Structure formats: structure tokens, C-alpha cells
Image (cartoon, rainbow, N blue to C red; front, top):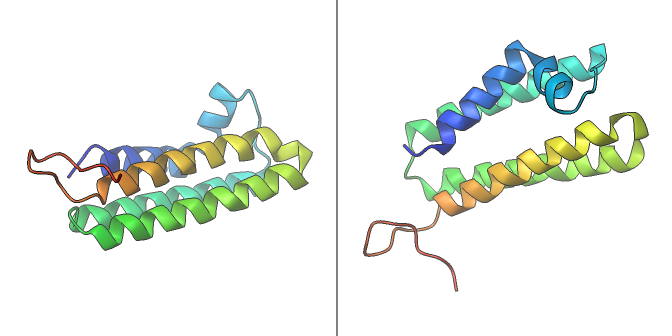
Length: 122
């Protein structure tokens, strides 16, 4: 297992148990009751995704499927940010986090090179 799935699990656990923590501390934004529920659901999704990929950490398919899920999530957050000014800051921040996870999943899905490190696509 790499650093990615424990990081995702920790992020998901934070969202599930303290949904207001990131918004309040980093964004200086207070979540309403609807956003709190959504953040908790997303936290549960991160925990589930980390557990599934953690069971088969060398599965290229699972890493790529995880990246697709993260990119779909990022795209919905961009749409939300552009359509709802009250949630813009939090939605863009969440889209950035989702893009980070998608990129990390894609890098994790790269086959290892001769030296044991993921090869880079050219």
C-alpha cells in the first residue's frame, strides 16, 4: 500500500466525523445543514474507496476507476461553484482536492519501471 489510501481514509474520516473542520479552519466558511450532510456522505465515500483499493493496492483497474470517480466528483463541484455563489469557495476547494486524488490514483496505476518506481507515460 502507498501513502495514498491512508491519506484518503484520513481525509474521509475527518469529513465524516468533523465535516465543519476543513471549511471552518481553512476556508473560514461555515457549512449549513445540507452541506454538512453532503460532506459526511463524501467522507463515507472516501473511506469506502480507500478500503476497496487498500484490499488490492496493485490493481490498475481499481486505481483508474477511483480516478474516474474523483474526476466526476471534481466536475460536479465545478458546476456547483459556477452555479451557487454561496458555495463557490468550498466547491472549488473540494474540486481541487478531488483533482489531487485523481492525479495520485492515476500515478498509482502506472506500471512499475525496471527500478521499481512507476514509469512515466511519454
